[in-house]
Amino acid sequence: MIVRQFLQWLQTASPGNRADATSALARAYLHSDLSADDLAAAEGAMVMLLDDPSPLVRRALAEVFASSQKAPPIVVHALACDQPDVAEPILARSPLLPDAELVDCIAGGSVDTQTIVARRALVSRAVSAAIAEVGCAEACLVLLENDGAEIAPFSLDRIVERFGHLAPIRETLLGRPDLNAAMHQALLAKLSQALAGFVTARHWIKQDHAQHAAREACEKATIALAAETGVDEIVDLVAHLRASGQLTAGLVLRALLSGHVLLVETALAELSGMPVERVSSYVHDRALNGFAALYAAAGLPEIAYPAFREAIIAMREGVLLGEAGGPARLKRRMVERVAAGCAQEMRDDLEPLMALLRRLATEAARDEARMFCEDLVARDRYNAPPPDYHFTVDDRLVA
Image (cartoon, rainbow, N blue to C red):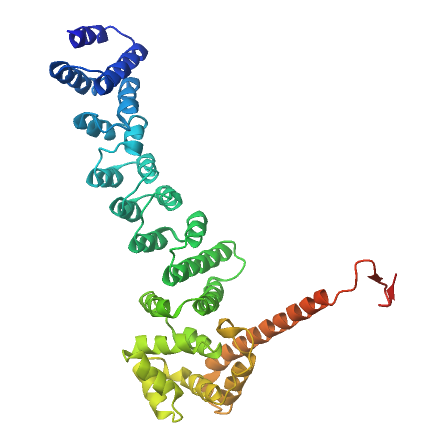
């Protein structure tokens, strides 16, 4: 009887009054001690209200039912497919929406819908995967910032692939503790390409020069990253480099000239298909025949072999011993030794390789000078005079 009177009253009530009455009816459905007949009648009335022309009425239903387990499922599912300002409470909080329905909302939803789902208190791996695959950049950023979202590694990979060039997403990803070395390197590559595109678009340098500089900067950053990567992640990092076309002779040579032997051996194993233990034996064997065969099996360019050969010989002779900086930077003595060895061959076709070695030698010298100056400054700071004294122009200590 009450529901029948309510339906009659709705025909003449204003949208605001209809919304207030709808909210009261929904709360009564959840919290009042209604008979089975009254509950059925109330549910029927609310199903009818799903077609109310005013979004205020439908939003009132959504606000009441958003967090309830007792809400009528048919009403909840219909509200979830309504316009974004009506669906927002349901999409954001309803426990009655299964993952499959949330995935459908993401696939066919607007930017607002995707962002609302990504902000839910708990987001499953399946829903996160859908956002990573088809969600907009804003939804992916919200997902990454959501502590309640469970994101699988392959979903992080997909976000890196789709939006790693965007600074907010890149910075958020780099701050995640579950970001592995391969994802980190992919972001470095995205950053390098973004910087190259930036300077090219402003006509500061030519495109080919910008791409070349970006590639070398990315290689340098990759070696530094590998130096901080655990042994168990090196294999995955190298596999990623090969899959992305970055496992080049230049990168492997830079690793060798930096003394990162583990990265070199893992890279050669990946390229040749040999076990890393066998590769290591070839690298450290006194005879060069085994390494030459390994190099050929890895498919690296023949023109670069002299540099690898000279680096292996220098490494076996202990040139790397006593070098500072660890495997994160080029070693000046190693680079100069390799360059001198290659220069003795007097071959015209080695000029591109010699040009590369000259650039690497310059980089190594600059890094060494920077470390030397930083060390001097640190020593001066340690041995600084008391604060009550100062130096005059002629460097005499006066009170």
